[in-house]
Each structure stands twice: as structure tokens, then as C-alpha cells.
Figure: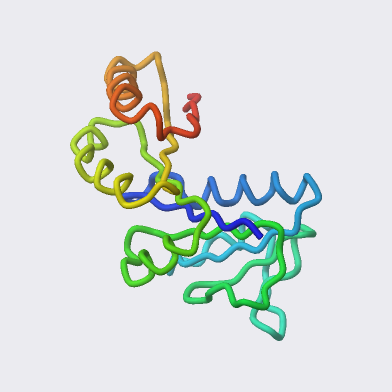
Length: 170
């Protein structure tokens, strides 16, 4: 079982969107996926077309091969899944270290914005806390000069820890 945590330093970075896309792509490759949505908004279920809880508290309807646990749920030792994907919003500091330590990979989503440049020291601290921590740059748009400059800075500063880039198309 591979465990991936997706998080961000600020809201609106695209955490739930990435968790949804990653989970659906894995399910399309015939992997059994367990998602844990620690966001108190509890909106990830709508990405999967899930509308009700099963008796054991897990979402089962919607996309085959994807199960979803809601806010506050954790992975137990008896869980079976090929991939566990955890949506951990910035507001859940109470779970961060426990969840990060158990993960095979922790992906920090960083929008390519001026605000992210100001967060470079926090990004550096995040990456220094473990070899299992990586960055995914979101909202790249080379047509916008500020985003192009921010992207160049982030790539120069953190190149060896960037595992992906998502382009923003208008």
C-alpha cells in the first residue's frame, strides 16, 4: 500500500482537485484507492459522485475502485488498498506530523503566484523535514509575466524536489 498526502500552505491551492484527479487516474489503471478527506468542508465526495455513506462510514457508490473516508478518519492497519491518497488542508495542523510521518510521499501544492514567492522560506522548512516531501507547481501560465517570473524562481530554488507542474489554461 502506497500512501500519498497532498497539502498546501494556503487554501485554494488545488489540493482537493489534485487528490480527485490522482485518485481517478489510479482507479482507471485498475488500482484500489482509498481517499481520506480531512477537509472540514467535506467536498471531495462530489468529485467522485458519492452521495451517501455506507454502514461502515465509507463512501462506496460513485466511481468503482475508490473508497472515501470523511474528515477525521484515519487509515487503520487492516485497510486494504493499492493507494491511499490523503487530502490534508493547511488548517489541520493537529494531524500533520502524524500523517506526514506515515506517508510514502507528501506533496505540497504551490500555486505559481507572488504570494508563493513570499512563502519560499516556509517551503524550504517544509522540504527540510523529510526526504519524502515534494513540490507540485500549480497554475503555471507563461503568458503572464509575473507567473513566468515566479515559476522561474521556484524552479531555480527547488528544482530537485519538484515532481510536477500543472499549467493554468484560461
